[in-house]
Amino acid sequence: MSIAWTQVALAGVWGGLLALERQAFLQAMFSRPLVAATGIGLVMNDVASGLFVGMLLELFFLGGASLGASLAEHETLAATSAAAAAAAMASTTDGQATPSMWSVAILLFLPMGRLGRTIERALGGYSARLAEQASASAEAGRLRRAVRQNLWGMWPHFAIYGALTAAAALVGYALGPQLAALPPHFTKALAWACPAMGSVAAAVAAKSTKARRAGLYAGFAATAVTAVAALLAFWGSR
Amino acid sequence: MSHSPPRLRKRTLAQVFFRSLFLQASWNPRGMQNLGLAYALFPALRELYPDAAAQTAAVQRHLTAFNTHPYAAAAILGGVLFHEQRIARGEESPERVATFKGSLMGPLAALGDGFFWLSLRPAVGAFCAAMVPFLGVWSAPLLLVLYNAVHLTFRARLFAQGLSLGDRLVEALARANLPTHGARLRTVAAASSGALTAWLAIAFGAGQGGEWAAVLAGGCLALGGLSYWLVARGVSRYLVLYAGTALAAVVGGLL
Image (cartoon, rainbow over all chains, first blue to last red; front, side, top):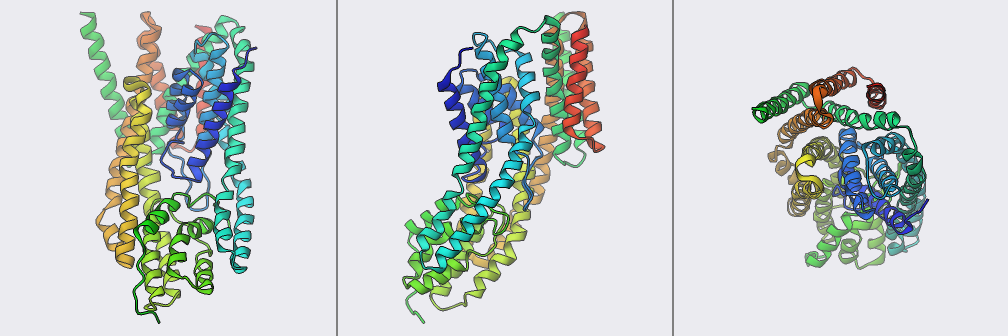
């Protein structure tokens, strides 16, 4: 098993930076699954894996949002870890990504969204201590020190989520050869699971939009696409 | 009482705006965004209150619990600076700024959550996901461009409005009519998702080819419809995804 440690490190850094962007700085949607996973694909030389994983998880997590004090699932960690694992698996087979690899990566790392939320809750305690230190520093007149406690809240997000993304890449390197050794009908089963997941995720996304008459608009759009595809197939066959 | 009106330098305003991007760096369940707020305001408070005791009091009044939408917080930051300048001139009491924050953070949170998190983000995300088959990797930068054209404009404008209008920024926000735009964006999100469901099913069928192409595409589409129905009835989307995947895998392994 040959591990590209540079790619693993880059994936870890990218995963850590995106965790910061999601919560601590800017929130300009670099941390959304479509962008985050595509970025992982770029740094690990497998854009196709990053793009498919990102598209599917963007849909699956479409309706999630942290409202008030409630925390959403960590869609960024799910996306970066699944994409890193998929890209690592592909690199063990001379860079040829397959739908079966994407299926395995998504199924294994989708629950990372919930793990990420649990970690985020735990990090809230650390940030609360920073706020207490800030208050104490302010009372003592050390104002610059007080307000800079805000920045200390960032490093655990970078370290933990970056490490988890890198670990997912390592899992991918370990799984790649195992997947290649599966019998063909298992591989085909996993490959068929991929488009099914896409359709399911897109349908879940339509419901999660909370649009009035979401089913109607989604159904109308699906019908339109199907009609156009049928027309094109008909013209193509003549 | 000071008679010379303290006015913040443009450089200080730019520093406050840049620091506002770190509003949630130390979000915590007790004070929430309090530390981020104090961090963002500090350059302005340092300039407005050269006296150490007054500066300390100003920082401390912004270390109280605070939570709102991170983009809409720009409006409150601007408004806080509006009031702090008046407090520094002796035209208002310090309690005024606390009232301002307290009265606005809830409504602005609802406004920001409803428009950005629940409307714009899903619309842009679903639309750009639907563009992946046509634009490939360029779907990702498209998401960033479409979203941030609105996000950054909104954030900068809110800051400027809060700074110049103070409490009257509520009227300016009402004129933006965000709930109506949000409803339209959610429709875009639903339609994009539906279109992509169909496209993925058709692409799968076409990819397998042969006499089974239409059946496979139809089966995949039906799975999408069934998933929508199940989620609408409260079934966990994780369960729907894993069960749908298992079903497709079994069919694929058998055929």
